[in-house]
Amino acid sequence: MKKILKKNQVIIYIIALMLVTAGYLNYTTNTKNADLETSMQMESNDDTQLADIGDAQLVSSNDVVSEEETNTISNSTNETALTENTQLNQNTINTDGNTNSTTNETTINTSTTQQNNNDYFVKSKLERDTMYSQMIETYENVLNSSNSLETQKQTATQEITKINETKNSIMICENLITTKGFSNNIVFVNGDSISVIIEAEELKQEEVAQIQNIISREMKAAIENIHIATK
Image 1: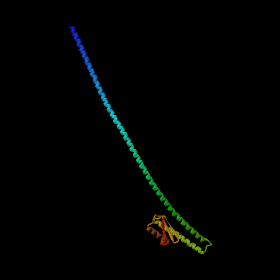
Image 2: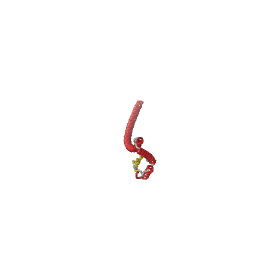
Image 3: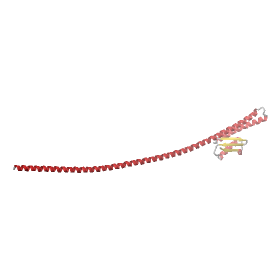
Image 4: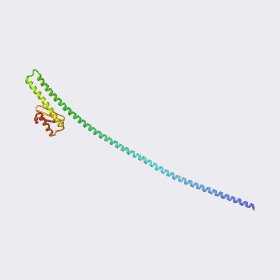
């Protein structure tokens, strides 16, 4: 009876051991399957993440390209604006240069003309005064010559007086004409004819009348013998 019980116990132990082993194997298999599924899910998630990362990189890459294109367009626009500004400044410089050149040329021409007029009046007065000085010197030689007749000496004295009076009248006339606003003027006397040269583009009728009155009064000349010209 005891032997039968021992056999039954051994069988129970063996069955129990088999159940434990089967349970262990089942647990191990489920664990492996779960790990496999987990691993597959992780790989799937990793692929999705990689896809997402790839998309993000692609977007970033596009953004970079867009920024480069934007910078290129901006640089191109800046270069175009710089070129246009440079051309505008150059045109302005050229325009200003041409304007300044024209102004300078006009100023130079005006200055040259003014200088020539000044030289004309100075030179003409010098030549006129030199002529009167030579005439007076000639008459003085007659006066001082022992060979001169008395009538010649009287004539020489009269001519010297006349020349000095003419010179004095001319000086007065030129000074009075200057007070009328014509600083450059000169008076020539040739017998009864008197010529007046005035530096002016034109003379108004009242200005002509003023000059005629001065010459007529100071030199006892008839109006029709007074000739006025501009230079």
